[in-house]
Length: 99
Image 1 (cartoon, helix red, strand yellow):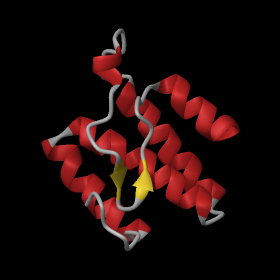
Image 2 (cartoon, one colour):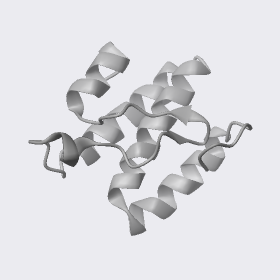
Image 3 (tube, one colour):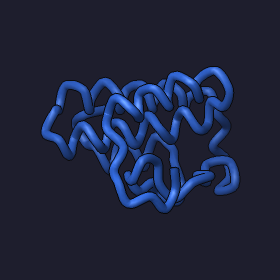
């Protein structure tokens, strides 16, 4: 889904998340971040908070001692830009009180 101009809908991202959760938990974590950002941008703070919390829960299952361990594999998901590194600190910085 990288380099696409059309933004994926929240429903499309949620479908992607469900598939990735089974096959690639890191990709699912990236998609959870994208869902949190998408819902925030749509003004749906409740759904954004849910996805922030989902992202943080998934992040707990990964090591985060080195930059390589927290580097994202994609630059964007469904048109939502991802940070270069994804860990709890970045999520808290980007979403503040929503975590």
